[in-house]
Image (cartoon, rainbow, N blue to C red):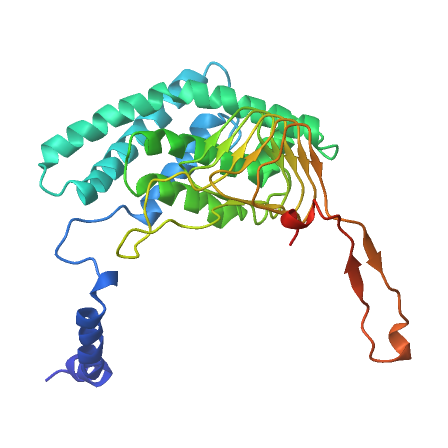
Length: 326
């Protein structure tokens, strides 16, 4: 027996195998064996990066791109994305349709990819309005280039808008993986199912959550920490959550929601031109042209060196506001 073989046997961890195999049998819900492969997270990350190159030509390239070079560069990235996308879509469709042949799945993936690219000009037109809204809405913005390269809200929205195309095609898993890739980079969690209008601006953005069935109108502005979430989940007779219902709010045109506003419920509508103040907790609809804020805050100032007493805070609200407060 060679020295190398002896060393391998000494380093073997065969005694660890059996308990782990037993856990595979006992906790089968988090295994994925003897089934078709799943979309690769690394592949989805590469796809999302390439989509940013396609959506914003010249912004994410190491070298400058001239107008003369643009057709060739665009064709190259289109071909690359098409191959990545067809493969990822085919793998995703297999999750839902395991009995279909690879040829059928690939044909469906190709057709979806063609329709996806047909939607890119519309997505780019919407993103142009998003950049304009960010520039107009943030006095700190010095240029459109700064917004494209440095504003996480735009990146999150850009990926959500292309993922939404795949969501509408009912592609399983892949759209959600794309928006979660953006979430991991930006701290902004937008479900691919959310329907978002033009001139959408997320200022700062960290902690923003937008649910699947949320509908957002045109010229809406959100600040960091805003949640557009579900109030409760309807369950069936067996206690399982019913899927596919409208669970998230409708935010109409020209609404502004300030930091940490929490708005819940599928039957909750924020009327057009309304403003929701910071830290408001809301589960009821608001009429158009409403300003909704927390009551005035009275703060007690104490000398920190005088003793262990802590400052006290009193929130004053009127009776008709109390239902909307935390």
